Every structure is written in structure tokens, then in C-alpha cells.
Length: 310
Image 1 (spheres, rainbow, N blue to C red):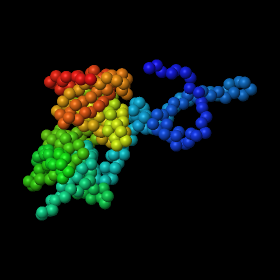
Image 2: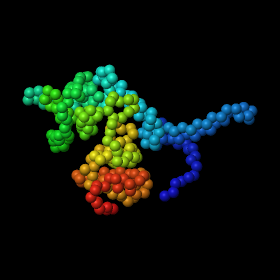
Image 3: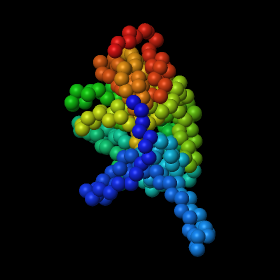
Image 4: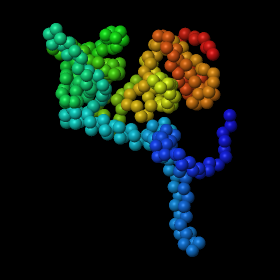
């Protein structure tokens, strides 16, 4: 298919509304090129040259624009919110923040209390923001052991819970959106390898990646699957994918659950033959698209050979 290179010409359509314009700007964006010369008596006096890109933030970030500003703004907002919510001590900094909860046990009663789990370089805190209340907290120096244990919910879904043993011998059970990440950070804290309070815009120490780069993810949605651009990160333990505008990864796939990787025929977001299909041990299929699909298939294929089928 060849692109139509005929010059774009302005059109007038009385049916176009402001809502249509906003939708185009948010989803696709517009590039403005304006060269203006102000002349008096046919003598050019002032020149104006404008090059501007106008688009929704998700579109901007997907094309690599304004990322530094976005990262710095998000980091500042998160630090400010944490400082107000936790009453941070002098020199204390937030290392990790995630939604989660604390299992309250009083006599025969047990019940989950949802909130936000904060890991600082001094404490582990579960905070309910409205009305504000610290549901549970402990000093990191008091943590004696931490482990992940699966638990089957009432609906039959298996979820990982974090069991924390403290100095007085008590055991507390926490939930977290990414329990493996919180477990890894707490394990490093007990070994004295937890990153210090985060500097502005800095990130917590992470496992070195085997590969990372831009991928498209075919995200399941109620209205139908949607291709979205974002950043993929492959470590020895897991594959994650996150859009620049998402607060958390939309895809977290343990490498042990990847049973096979293959390229699919046909056209994808990155061109012909760019779509990858990952088969999981549970029998599900995850679809990604890459500019270098062959390299990603090799990286994501398990050690045992996997037959490629069309």
C-alpha cells in the first residue's frame, strides 16, 4: 500500500463541531506550520515562524514528546501527596507506593481494610486516606521475615498475599497490587540494600533488564481489544508493559508462564509481520507488536523449542 502524498487542503464542513475537533486533537493530534511576514508598503519588517504539535498527552508521550516534563510532574505530585498523607519524618523518603490493604484480626473476626501501602526507607505503612487513618505500620528494623503465600478468594481466584513477621513474633497479612515488587523491596531492606530516600524524579532500584524497548500491546477491553503503544521491560522473572500515561503496568507476565512465542502473519501497528503471539501455560494468548519482532520472539521464547504455527 502506498501513501497518498498529495498536498493537504483546507476543507469546510458545517457539520463539524467543537467536540469533533477535540476528539481529533486528543486521539491523533495536529501539527501546525505557520510562516508569517508582516510588511509595510511592501517592505518586510517582521517574520514569524511557528512549528507546533498539539495533541492529547497520551499521544504526545507515545511519540516520545514531553516525557521529561511528564515524569518530573508525576514524581513531584507523588512525593507531595505522600508527604501530606504520611507526615514524613525529617529525612524520610518514599521508596514504593501501591494500592493494597491490611487484614485485621480481632478475636474471631477477620476482615480486609483497603488502603494504600507505603514503603519508605524507615517504615512500612498501610494508610486509609478518607477518612485518614494509619491502619497498620511497622519500622523496617522490626521486620524479621517476609514471604509470599497464595490465597484463594471467595470467587475462586488465587492471589498472592504478603506475610510480614515482626520483632514481637506477630504476623501481619498485607495485600498489594504488585506483591512481588513489594516483597523484593522488603527483602532488600532486611539485607540492608534498600535504596535511600528517592531523589526528585529517581526510581527505586530494579532488577537489570534482559531487554527493554517500545512495544504495542493489544489490550483487552469491553468495547473490543485496542492496540496501545508503551514501554516493555523483560527481566529474568517477568515481562511487563506500561503505557506512558498509566500509573502501573497493564501487563505483568512471569517468564515461567510463557509457554511459547511466535510471529503472526498479517499487518500490525509496526507494519507487516510485526505482531507477536505469546502462549501462556494457562492456555491464554497475549499479543504484542514490535519494530523488531524477530528479536523479541527470540528473547521471549522459552529454553525448550516451540513449534511455530500460522
